[in-house]
Length: 286
Ligand code: PAF
Image (tube, rainbow, N blue to C red; front, side, top):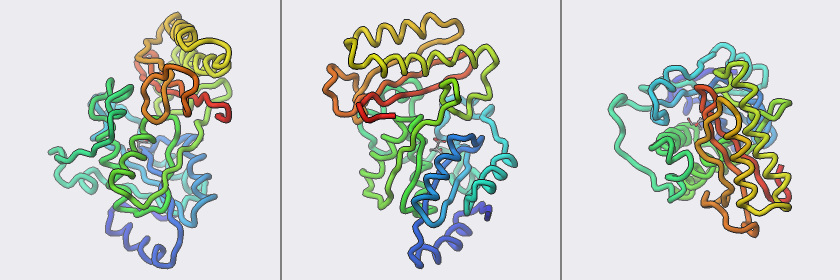
């Protein structure tokens, strides 16, 4: 497995492969890899010839400097995981490589549509501009045919799809199923910040989502929301930011169950750690 730090070295390795018509997959990550990331690598391997994984803790998507500072960076562990998983290439650029004028912000903006400002966009202003800025730079550097993202950040996948449409980029975006611990907790790099008590309390998020999914055909939307929010609000140490049943394409709350693509989304602070999770509610959803 090759580890590459600069865009020019990356292009030197990838260009001949692209000329030889190898299908290139990109799995963008911020490191602190877990089984969820490995599932993305696996899906990428099934669909492409070469899998590139990027590890870059992107400063422009953090709205809280403390969150950026404490973001876990277990690099050696990450590299071993990727190598064991058979990843072909790791791209690990410096901040200066991706943002030459850093810390001066780059003044460009992508129109991501109205959904940018809902849910996470409301609580983390500018977050998805930062995400799409770096994903665009990674796409420009790697030129992948296909890229894989976890459904856990449902809104992120939607924003990236909107960006790809906006620039008419020749890359296919794949949203991959959420990987959960046995008890239901969605895997996240942030879970390592949870204390033992937080870890127990955090289970209410997936339980509330599962409750909505199980009862979607039985109760009306207002009852579902009231009961799910009630479960979370009753849990000590969990502070709810939002729980919504939304249309997966607009992220606006649905008004009736005929919506094509309903999804329940939640965000809450568990102890000091902010977690997000979601569940698709359609009949064929996992
Ligand atoms: O989901 C993440 O880990 C990040 O938001 C991403 C897509 C790698 C961009 O920094």
